[in-house]
Length: 402
Image 1 (spheres, rainbow, N blue to C red):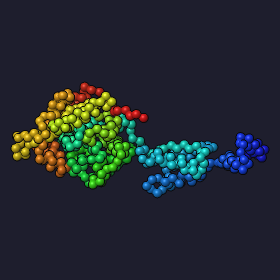
Image 2: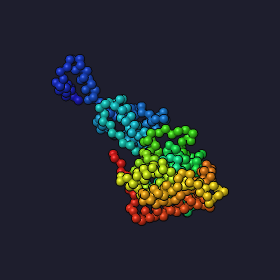
Image 3: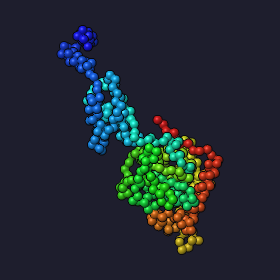
């Protein structure tokens, strides 16, 4: 800027203000500083060096999170931040922190454009999330305490006993019980690099691939998570795991209707639902709500059928005797009323409790009373699934409002 140009610029700026001499002079000094400011890479990198990644004590520069694509054009700055995973929980907050650092240590007038990249390949889009899975079965109950997890675990084992490829996902984030039922409380899954992504490897037992949040949390402590955090954890167990090729993917859902159920129908095209209930009226009333949830116009997941658990008590020494402790054929009447199939009736025998506590599902012994009942139930599920796939179009995931 020549002396003549500077004088002309001063006059133009002065004419825009009717301020006392000192105030006007200070303002002009700031304008001159702004006019003369030139951005350069080290100025930007020094500002970014003040931003630390949570939990590491290191800043984004020394962690090499700032990609070598820094561009400066006048007062416009653009660059990319590199994260390990596309699902990094601090991605948005780190972008905001970097913007704030540049504004604080360089100038508020800098226009900052930050793009994000990840070293790991992104999770596939929802329709292609589990391309190797043929059928997804949601095992649900209107209320807790009806043996839903026992039914889900034994269904998975029985299907595997039939020679099918089976996966079982414990979707109950706040009360996982599958690790206990498979005697895998101390199991800890590991990850493997598959097609550019670090995927959790399900633990296989009894021919079933199993995952549960119980593998990752302290079993003696309550999981105090808000709904959003629990749903994100569930999505990771689904989309960031190497489930591979499966004939049946069994979902052990939480009791009732919740955010978890909404997340499932918004994430997976569920082939059909199996509703578990006991014969007593209080359980049947909640079973109706479970059926209604899946049959809702916005959800539209077919009901494969109902299964009656704890249908009667049979002493091991007297297998021909039946004692109807919770009422008789209540689920059968409900299935007729709701016009959905009755898939099976599972009796109460002492060994079913023992097998659950020991981590050996009853379906492993098809010669036992309960093992035989579960094998018949699994065969009926296969039949109804095949019928559903023949007569109905594939389920579509529920859309989300953005």
